[in-house]
Length: 388
Image 1 (tube, rainbow, N blue to C red):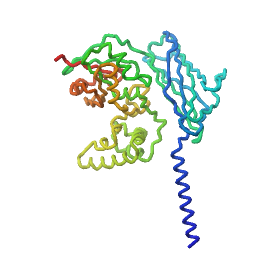
Image 2: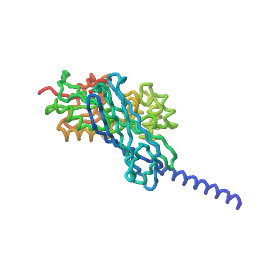
Image 3: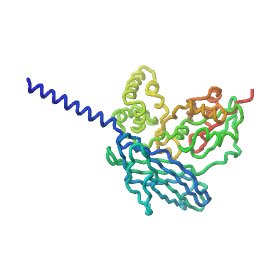
Image 4: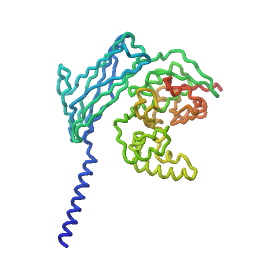
């Protein structure tokens, strides 16, 4: 009896020890090195030479742990409306550690980022060619190793820098719609370097008047908010790998990475239960229950191929706090605003709108999808109601 009690006690102790180790492991941040949004500027913008200078900062948010960056390199992909045969680019990386001078040979030496500290890298991109005006953007991929409590992990931080900017004052053609007119407005390739109020001030204000309503697609808004995820950073789990086969091939949830994105946001329990209840409801003729139960992002996630290059390589989430965005646009520009989800099937969903935006007019004006879903690059549509 004593030996049996000792044995049970040992098992309990081992289980408690295992539970403590697992709890400690899960709550530790490990290699939690954050690559912050970059700061990019044109240092030169001549017809045959662009020089862009960016600063990429890395922050260690942990309270006690140290994380090292032993390796860092940069790859660049240029996007253009024309051929890149005669276009060349060169990248230089200069360490900007707060307490160590960079080496003259450009070697990136292993550096320790202490708890609550940061370091940075200056990235210089030179682009040359006979005529650079057709270039649309530079996709910069900062590849770095984080070395610490979780081992040696490979990471990539993505920055997209627009290179081509349409004239905001160019003459554009209004189109008649029931109840008013619409004006699709071209912009540069919108990226994480932009904000909605800035875009409206720059491209919409020259064409707007009092009473107009500015509408912006939900995907461009999400991209400006940095709500993009590269599939290489996603590890599909049990739930995602099994549920994807029950969705239409055209759904953004029909791939393991797309579904895992939703699981990461809402949790596996909610997504699984939404699927079970949705399947039962469908048997009784009630379609769409899964999307009502699985959270707003279930409808808004765009999987790869869902938008313009290079973001067609990414999963794009729905925008964060769209009501705050439209309120900010109105506060800073004076225009009524709405964030919308529109497709070529004549479906218009208004995610958010200011109080004075005319919702029936917005739905009717956007039903023909004047912004387009191809390479029009007109993510903003201005709506002008008919004079009453």
